[in-house]
Length: 412
Ligand SMILES: [Ca+2]
Image 1 (spheres, helix red, strand yellow):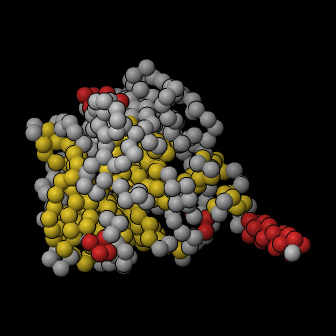
Image 2 (tube, rainbow, N blue to C red; image 1 turned 90 degrees about the vertical axis):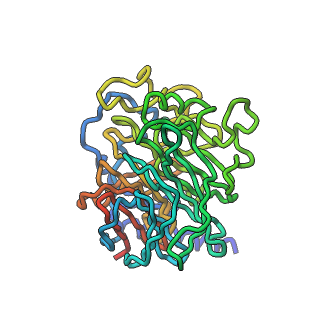
Image 3 (cartoon, protein in one colour; image 1 turned 180 degrees about the vertical axis):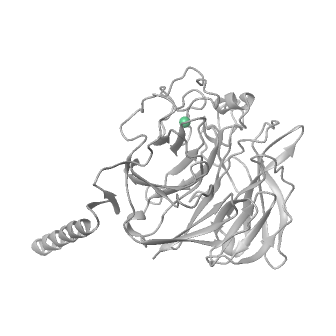
């Protein structure tokens, strides 16, 4: 028995080694192929600062190149400011439009119908109807949740609402607000937001600090809802087990804090941990692993500077009690929606992270091993598109852009 088992193991090792040789010197680690040819980093521009990373590989990692042939096709156009794209269980796509509606497209990209009846959104600036996610029981209850910017008093804020998708009637039924990231501020910037359900049936929601200096400092305040990751129930109450449930003067919905403006969230398919991307200022866009009760540092620590060039705070990048990003970019990517590739159709993409870049006009592919970024690639960099969100379904990636296009990336 023992001899036979040993033989099988050797055969597998030989196979891995041979396929590695056939794949441009790639090696296999935990199901991902990492190019071992040591290409220079994809970023060649000068950084805004001479700040030093906290560890090797925290920025400008070795480039990788996808070996498996793939197609990128524009399957729909003329969408008016799409903000989020998610797959429905049947493979069709649900897309939010910033001005305040949603569309259902079939898997080939054709418009099936437009859904209206949402509460009014404040769509100035970065505001509007933002993210959408499906209730875990969606096939039966047709319930969806969305985030949006809501006029509130003399200002506005990020709110989360839920309702029932009435496809036959092309409208949302029984819409109701379940959560508001207070306080309201008068700003058209940094609303976040992304949402997704944890395996326990509670909802993670990200939000920004509204860009104003008045909101920026509140990212560190546990009694403010600006610059936070929340975890709430389906009714918008604090999720059981939240880290600040019993802390006086803290918002019990807060899961993590010190966030600048987070427009990307997904759960790592193997570790089950929550990953996040957020916009830095000039330099310092970040990828973080979000853990309960942790402080992600903004605006005390950052790898960026003010847009005008001045330093932020004490110009420090690391501090005890504050979490370091897993990875950062300088110059920035402007990371919006992101998704893990939860499949094997393109083998080297399994468990890789795909992040839509706005100002960078590409999709960043990050290869991750043991919670470290070990390779970076720029995809669709020749399309000249601001990638607003990326989705995964059944081996395919979809992306929506500010230019109003829907892209599908598939194995050739
Ligand atoms: Ca940070």
